[in-house]
Length: 588
Ligand code: TEU
Ligand code: CA
Image (cartoon, rainbow, N blue to C red):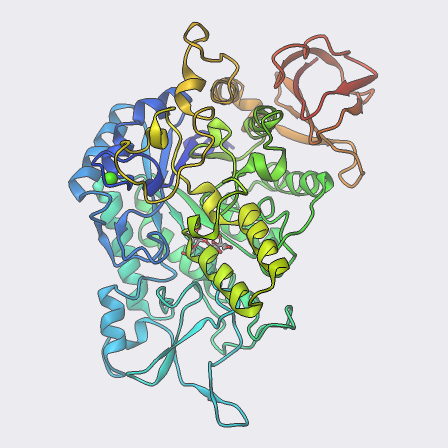
């Protein structure tokens, strides 16, 4: 059997359009801004551009609240601009992946406007409406205890005064959940997919696609946060009873008729058999999904995300080992990523973003990602080793609805409590989604070249842009640049990945050492019929010892994230790894 597929080999680059590149001086990135950077992306080695939502939207959740699936938000441009983007991508042999957000719409979508207008409107049943419950005191209560995902301390149900019912809004009240039980809703979604595929888009990243089928009795979620009124109910809405039926239907009705790339976002679910039902070679559902294990590594298991939780290198080894095997041993497929628009920056999270270690850490992560199996997703700025926003920023710099909700709630729960305020600021700086949403750093000009110097960007630019930017990382050495910058390292890593794709994309994987041991080194072997490589990564700011397993025959150390000194490491016995050092070796 031939397991080769173009979408397995593709490098996908995620663009957060508001923060990528502004071309009309309003401080907000736009579609023309994406088009004008295609050569930059091509040069890096990108094949597919995924843009977070650019559709018409009131932007309550930065476009993940769509008011019209067939129009572009005026802030981003026009349909004509998108047609032009697709044409320019085609010229460069690149493709466009759209973000499909169909678990919910905006409350300003015409469908919802109709649905909420009266109980007997034909679209009433397009959303999930329920009667209130009443407690012993006769007070009105939502139909169950589910908490809102982006306002974790609030109810997932929103009261509608006009029709005296609640509607389900898992993310925010501005994002009512569609009722997928209704076949008209599903047909309308299929129509949206066809609209974009016929226009020249090549596929979709499907937002929270595993939440579309809910357990229809809507039971209460287990109490995991006893000091709060509302609880995460994902057991009853993640991978619900009809999910696979709906995905197979999308495939049959639409996707099977085009040559597409599809990736489903699948939070809350880790069960391998459940995952394989979606991404197994014969599943007939989606090409791959985003598994959250790696980005949940510092979350309190099963609980609220806006909290701090220590993680260990063994967690990373276990998680990588598990999903690598799923692809290779069980013929599934998966995505590979460390960053997206919902997470802090990877160098700040998994390594050390101090001036001393930032570049090494970012290269360590690049070495890891370019040598593991899975379709690789690079998030804008990750290729520069961009870091989290600084701890000196006040709460007013955070723009994301989740950050804003969190901070407000903490301040109202603990008024005047300086300790809690400091804790809330630390959580924001370490975990906020805003960390990845600060404008892209192109140059050392004011506003980092994201927008012109005389306009105010929609979100503050990270203060480190004079030293962390694309221009300085791409300039030749003679012009004050650095041949060994994070950007150059990523580019070479991507080239190497493609050159040896039978190893790095399709090859076998073996974890070296015990996934549960206490060490800080993550080491693995990758091989095909013809070639073999070893990758050794020191996830620590200390020196670490690593013993070459006796069965491993290393021929040479071919590359590393330190500019000098990797090629003279010993080939057998004990190796000393410097802080955050990563090595790529060729095996016999
Ligand atoms: O995110 C879904 C999701 O469950 C998480 O990534 C979520 O954002 C995170 O746990 C909150 O801390 C998707 C989008 O990627 C996100 O930007 C949207 O806000 C969300 O869906 C709603 O559409
Ligand atoms: Ca603009």
